[in-house]
Structure formats: structure tokens, C-alpha cells
Length: 89
Image (cartoon, rainbow, N blue to C red; front, top):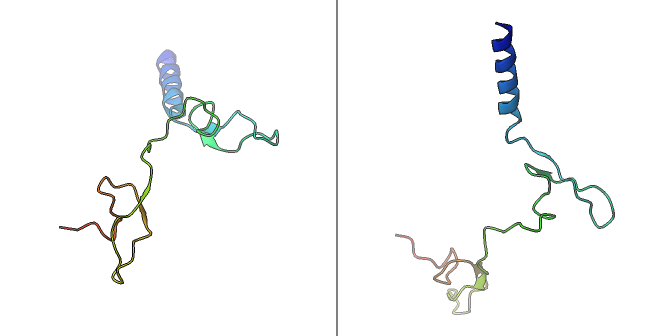
């Protein structure tokens, strides 16, 4: 019975520690420990292998305003229209 209790306790500790966040181990430019939280050893700022999810560059909207001027909003949509000029169905 004691072995089963120890096994259950060890298993529950392992499950609870999964996905826990810790403080980044790297140092900032001022030689102070980074305060970002991460599930890995290094945060996204200090990890050299980090890939951002968005590699799409923002462009200026090709729409026109009510006054006939060019729209100045930025967009990442493939149709190059901002949220104001994209037609909603």
C-alpha cells in the first residue's frame, strides 16, 4: 500500500510540474537577470532559435477614404485592405 501511495504522489508531482513557467536564465544588456517568464530555459528574446509566428510584413492599405484620400492604415491581409475597407459578407 505504501508503494502505491508513493507512486501516486510521484506521478502527481510530475503532472503538476508539467508546463510550469520559470524565470528566464539569461542576462539583459545591463547584466541583470531577465524577468520574462518561460516554459523553457530562455525566453523568446534570448532564444537564438525562436521563430515568430508572423513573418508577414505589414503594408499600407490600398483603400481610399470618403474624402478620396489614400488610407493610412496598415494591414497584413493578403488583399492589402485594412479592416475598414475589407468587405464583410
